[in-house]
Image (cartoon, rainbow, N blue to C red; front, side, top):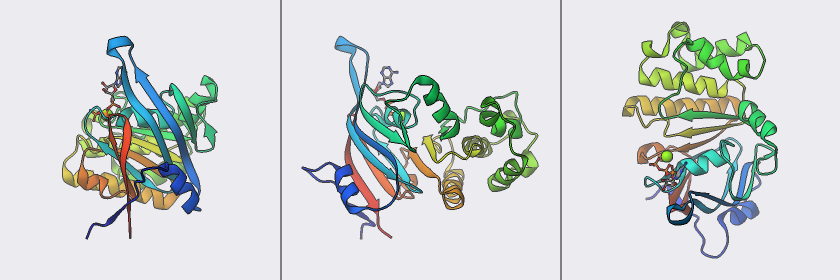
Length: 251
Ligand SMILES: Nc1ncnc2c1ncn2[C@@H]1O[C@H](COP(=O)(O)OP(=O)(O)OP(=O)(O)O)[C@@H](O)[C@H]1O
Ligand SMILES: [Mg+2]
């Protein structure tokens, strides 16, 4: 039997149904998001009227074919880009209303990003990469928290290593450490396992689950991989900039 129940509705927006039937704390509330690129004959509607609610402590996977708008949507939710229209309230911050300075603050303190190719700074070691967002925010990294994160990542004995001395799986763990160092309520990950073998991919997903259990973090990740998506609490499928299906995992 399918372990998912289909929640797609024809006439009522998904987020409206969820809002009515759920009392969990909403962390991300996106409504009517539209994002276009280019103009005239080059115009691409990358995100085309997306509504999405994400609850505290949830792991939501966004899937869909290449070019369906997954990264664009993730970037909007994570405050890396602004929509042409629509509204996003993410972790208590109205991303569509705030000024750029406040948006930059949201990115440093309230959201963490994880990318497919890790994006570590090569001249910084593991510890320094993890501490970077806090240091960029003008603060010293809390030593105790850094230790705890290194422990969680299983990288205590690699703390002085540089990116080129680490495996792909280890590099991705460092980038996750960097994403959670400021203890943001939300993490956004774009194909975090896209460059890893299946064993390392499973480890990364387990790590996200540990982080959710430990800190109550909310995780939105984009993946092409069905077996990774199947680990999420909810799977959202996009096509041509729209959400065409949403499946909730039933336990
Ligand atoms: N900066 C940009 N300028 C112009 N077009 C863009 C830009 N970013 C994305 N697009 C277009 O928007 C659409 C959605 O792109 P997006 O990167 O969100 O897709 P995706 O689902 O993440 O694809 P993939 O699985 O290949 O990463 C595509 O047609 C893409 O070409
Ligand atoms: Mg993408």
